[in-house]
Length: 480
Image 1 (cartoon, rainbow, N blue to C red):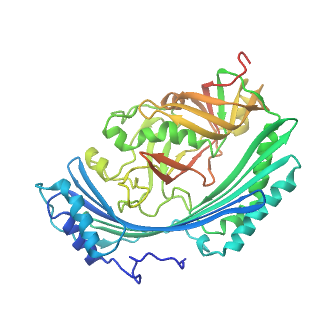
Image 2 (cartoon, rainbow, N blue to C red; image 1 turned 90 degrees about the horizontal axis):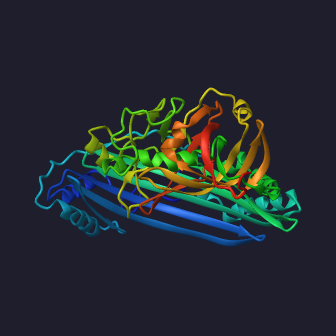
Image 3 (cartoon, rainbow, N blue to C red; image 1 turned 135 degrees about the horizontal axis):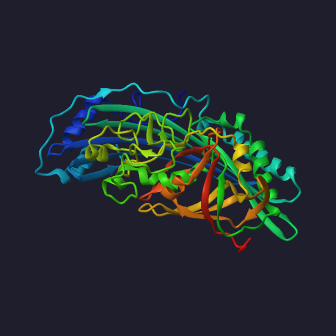
């Protein structure tokens, strides 16, 4: 599916970049030496709409474009970027990045080869090509549905964000890859009030899809889910405090895996030995029930990519297999250090940033237990349905997460909603305490964005129902 938006450096654009021109620019980047160089051209169009208090309060669109040039020699990296496609500006950026390699050995020029890529985000219509009035109508539908669902709803906010990102990657390893990456996210949040109490609820989703996402996941459905959550939490009681069994709901709970375990499996942290998993390949690091993969190939997933920002094609990289650590997520730099093949996890926020190992869609795979049997096995514990914010120490995996929707489990049944629930623990320790794993693996609807070293990229998470034998619950009801 094509769009009326097109990168100027695309073939047919106003300043096309072909293989011959990219080879000339790589030669400039490596003229003073270096082991490796790459070019990252990017054109991105972003749009956003915010609907609040029955009005369209904000609407915006902006375009960015530029080239990032990287030259590597040993552990040293030179990086420069430019927001122009003029040849003089491009070569200036290449020469600037090459300063890091001055005096080093140079590699001979490599002929670039265009690569055929998979098609992992088929779409019907780009969101950016849809008329603004039609998008406002979608937001109005969400607002109307939420207010009509329950008279206790006093505030509704709906939003739509959209992006089309076109990239061209050329590397001294011979890669020459083009990709056009759509991204849509729709969200509804509400506030309910009754009896002097207020609670919020939210629902959202999207991914690398077109506007047709909202035909299957309608504004009314997201509004209903946000209202359900807010109304349910109006009756929430103080959360118990102390160590107890915790059951994670499928899907969104994968964010705990992402933060508490996933970052520790990114290869740069292990190359620098700042991860709890450094030098642990082959060791048992989790329950034998646990197999963790990072899968950039999921169809239309928020973290899905046809090609990474270093020209590699991601597949499904197994990180932990039946509890044993078998690999890290690799970019070019770390893969060379470890002497392995890059896993297609080299990602960057934009042409202004250098790539590094990043997650795509990180998943804990299915177990064999029935989800109802998992809940029924808990005498007293917490059922974590939706996660809010959290903090993680990458060096040791210690985490604190807050729940936006959690329930007490009593005698094998999910009972009272809880407020003020925090889960406090250690990622590797939690992975060893997984005692039951459901057969209902689900991938979160596309809402998550991952931050690392000041760079943000869209990611996906997923897991089945998970039972953890002991997690510290930071509630307010002592002895409850």
